[in-house]
Image (tube, rainbow, N blue to C red; front, side, top):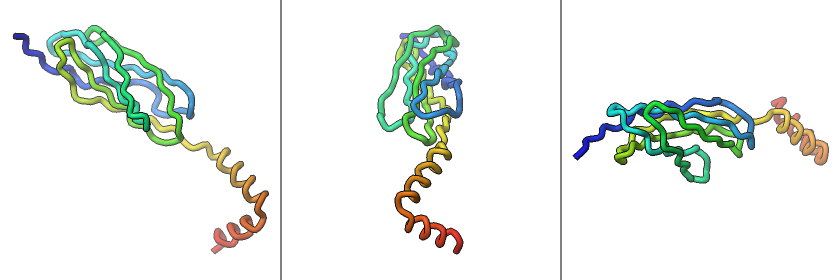
Length: 130
């Protein structure tokens, strides 16, 4: 019987900010204390889909890569676990990615709305002054 110690938590590399609906590449690296190969990296992207992506196999310490895009403007927490060839899973590694709101788009929308509803513009200016 082979005793398998879990691999190290994956180190996740990639951009920590970006634009919505733009694909970015992320790297996942973990070393196994026994030198066992990594059968797969199990990745949760932190979006509402709840889907996991599995990539692999890789040698211990070899980087695996996967691309993903954030569809919404918000902060995502990417999580990944490494599973070795014996099925032993590591603890999770994390990377926080921020997809900020585009302030210009928000301003354009506000200008469009107040242009269509002039009374709303007066009401907003009254509220802001108070």
